[in-house]
Image (tube, rainbow, N blue to C red):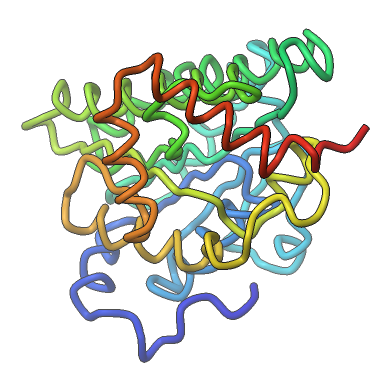
Length: 281
């Protein structure tokens, strides 16, 4: 499964907090943050059962009996509904205990709307917003019955309008506010909901979004394992929101305090100067 968090670096309180989970459901576990969540969850709780929902099966799942894969394209409403039914069947074979749902799947695109094409933006809305809402809604009765946590990946782009990534930033603004509001609705039910807002992360995200090499300075990015470790610690403490890394915290705080029009202008200048020349044509 890879390196994950070294066992000596796992706080005992974190390990103890995750022992109550018997099952973890993660979307997009084939790569990036999703794969890091699986890797680190197994470091903290080796006996936990994990189910991944994504279009492709993670290569590491082939020889692991505790790891289950359900093929699902979150952009397709019917596939999400079918996957939810399969999850119901899978959970019936797992002992009672808390559930952890990790809404990780999502993607972005850079360029002037509607570049690269309109269908890409509509698919982005389906995956980043509708798919996670549908899956969470279908699994919420199970979560309420067994207790558990919902971790949903937002982004620091959620804190201001993002020209040249307008649709992506807007979807993550929805994710951020929806997740925090959901946590309040769930107060006292035994289920918590936490929004995780990473900044630039060393994954395949920028390549998939249409950017070439050098789009993000290494000094401004974090590794997937670093982001996941911070997310898991925040979830173990019952937080409703965490921005990963002090640089990202400073950025999110400053961006949230600026007038929206001014923030959009600054964002456009930044993206045009440092990223738009990296868009693959």
